[in-house]
Image (cartoon, rainbow, N blue to C red):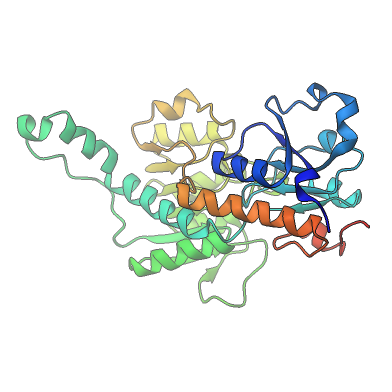
Length: 326
């Protein structure tokens, strides 16, 4: 039986504190705060059998660890992990889907309501004493009522968002790489077509080359002057410069964003936009959900090093039928 406490796991950069403590209690953890593999002495590298990271495990890091068996990613999105390279080297890659679906979908609805009803500014108005001094907060110019929502990325999270929007009486359409056979929502085979058909566009798609800057000036123009953009997927999916222009010149009405291209840096043009609601990537950021994500990450590592099937392998390695070496 594998001695887990003697199994060396590398943690590059930061990770959820609860998860870090569980990892240290379960494995022999080597923390690399800089994420720079050059800072890990070469003599230590052969002992590393697993990596537990937060969406930043490039091919270079994998190649520097000659006996690496598994990369356990903290998060459902793993565009920062070179999973194809891992699969080609026989390295398992896992992520943490499902356990954060409901939290992210809840946040998406909250962000949508904040954006449409200007709730953040309304609270600031009250706290500043202006309700008493200046009278009622001005009527909001936008509402969820009567809208049609389009969802880019009808996966687990996108579907959970769609279900919530339906409960709010909102019509739903979607764009995916392929049409789903298990939903009745209207399908659009291009993002532009979806944007033309709706006035609330919710981005729940993963990052990566296939979605990079997919929401560009053309899509924003198709969304139109009454259109609202919500992004809880990946910041790279939206052309931020085009969005800044669209918000400023009225191409679209408003935007609510929880993710950005170069986090934690947010473009000044977005910070200055009065019709943008900005959150610091908090969609899954409750202790409850982050603990569940961490528990799944650790469970995948434990199963792998016990010679059992992991719970949530990513698609790139699933296609190879990869099993534990030895």
